[in-house]
Amino acid sequence: MTTRIDKALIAEQNAKLEGFVKEDYEALGNKLAREDINIDEITAKAAEFQIAVPSWGTGTGGTRFARFPGIGEPRNIWEKLEDSAVINDLSQATERVSPHFPWDKVDDFTELKQFSDELGLKWDSINSNTFQDQKDQTASFKYGSLSNTSQESRDVAIQHNLDCIEWGKTLGSKTLTVWVGDGSNHPGQQHFQHAFERYLESMKKIYAGLPSDWEMHIEHKMFEPAFYSTVIQDWGSNILAAMELGPQAKSLVDLGHHAPNVNIEMIVSRLIQFKKLGGFHFNDSKYGDDDLDSGSLHPYQQFLIFNELVDAEYRKQEGFGPNYMLDQSHNVTDPIESLMNSAASVQRSYVAALLVNRPLLTQYQNENDALMASNTLKHAFNIDVSPILAMARLRKGGAIDPIATYRASGYRKAVAEVRPSNGQSGSGIV
Image (cartoon, rainbow, N blue to C red; front, side, top):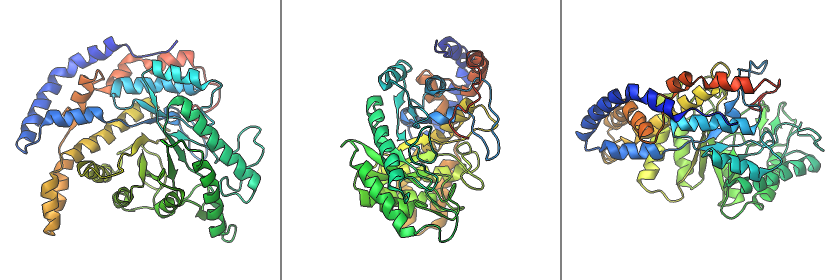
């Protein structure tokens, strides 16, 4: 039986805070009105904002050395969906789930689609996995998958991606995300150009299997597990591959997959300009691909990224419509709490970017007034939009304070009683 948080509890918890939220909302509305901003219009846009939850993110992640599982972790895709439904019930911003195959593979995808429908969830991008060998796999990915020197290994990787497309059709997805860990660990181990040629040859076969209304999102990563060279190592290789494949191929931006201090917002602008921005994996990082909670370290950078996204929305940029997804690893927190926290953080950046005075910003940019252009962005970033986020959740039937309501529900303890550990990672990772 599916475990859900009682709507009566959500209403009870909201009743304690609703009066304060309305006071704060009115005060913020008056402040924004002085700048000719209608708070209700902003709140309506906040309520429309959606960001997908990764199925693997509902389980505990791990380090390179160990994993410390929590109680009541989901053991399969069915239980991952149950947790995802709770996240959406409380946050009202995460109605889509992004699966990872073969971790989330089932015998009957029609049954899985019916279950997600019952929970009020939809399916986001399908993620393939060719960075590890699966049980009874006929050819290994030890030396790469889509770029492997072995045709047999490449064929296995290609077929897996084509299978993912078929499973995605049944679920109602429209996107395939492809990330490979292909590369080398030693100078001279791999011929750079030949490896890229093999990758493109393999991707063209997958691209040919895309339905006409699908997109392929290419994900890049600087390192890990390939520490000397990576086949798709940055946005340059990514967009070259996307341009080579065709209009249905676009680039995906993971915030942790860049060199330190790279100007990610400018990369986003370039991809938008050439109609190649497919989507995002939102997270945060300190040293590398840390997959920390979104906005936990660099909230201003996240805001600056959304400044570019909202600018494209504001200018009705042709070909603009990226997918948004969280991609995090939760080692010391409850995954449900972290995902709700991150969804609100990303939504906060979106709302703050909506408050930027774009005509004024354009004026300062054209006048080369660097200080006032910068201050225009900072002014919007520094406005506390918490009342807008809370009101958006309240009006949609969510929780004013999602984490407090979640803790009051005792959900984690309840599911722990029906989810005894099977000794495996619910996330699929480590």
